[in-house]
Length: 374
Ligand SMILES: Nc1ncnc2c1ncn2[C@@H]1O[C@H](COP(=O)(O)OP(=O)(O)OP(=O)(O)O)[C@@H](O)[C@H]1O
Image 1: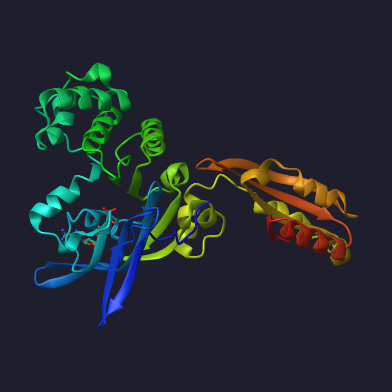
Image 2: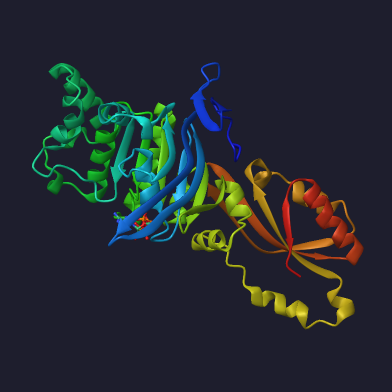
């Protein structure tokens, strides 16, 4: 599990009130993106619209970082600030150790080769073949014809489109077009891939296959991926960490599993509910509420959440069997958050109230998350 605040491979210092940040070459080089105090105002009809207020964010090399938010929250502006397609009003954007806001336009052009990007509507050249679409960014770097050919064929193979090289975009499905977009974005071996709602125009099956491809590429190339989405299942499927953006601010940030298990903001709870397949019928609790108090006190209903290895370990049953209580499973599911198994059970614990409380404490002491429902 990664830290919410990953280690930084940059050193920062202040001289005469000015804040400086430079790469620390003695470190392993784990930090690839730093956004500092980022603000973006758009001016429309002489009125200012604040799209980003005060964004501070650090993204580690090799991680898949998701940004989720509702329409208008500032997601597109934020991701487009990372390659300076949008110029921030203030703040710094440090990618691969360079503050992009300080570069000349030709330096920025060079720096952008290290930052690939894919888009919701693919942005392919409709009059060029798939081969030519992928070759396009390579030709801008003055590579030899044979180098270009070798690289295009490697990329076609990577995204599974070797047999489609001679086709035109209009002859491909949406998923295949996005594969071309991915191949084109990877042509110059970028260190970062930005995904702007890359699966929003695709059906669920195709979305899965594109997310799988992005996950595989992340592992194979150790590529840092930043994606924006309004769909929590995308975050759950491939992201390591997530930032929730609301009204231009990141209101919650952390490893995906933590955010799923313990959402702190109402907006995050709403996003988590989008993908919740844990529909415990709350009316089941009614049968306890109508019991005489003396009998009701002997029943406790708890929801136990498991993450990672504990999901398949008999920890819970060992604890409950060691105490003078009986238990009964009322409801349960097992799912996955990225590669981590994640389970939830609703249990009825029957026994003396003190023993039931003891059971809850012992479960918590073993690292299980326990919420008392009744
Ligand atoms: N080019 C622009 N000119 C003026 N205002 C803009 C521009 N782009 C975005 N905005 C405004 O900035 C705010 C954030 O927009 P942004 O597109 O970044 O949000 P978003 O979360 O990506 O939304 P969506 O999911 O609908 O694309 C909104 O109020 C939007 O109207």
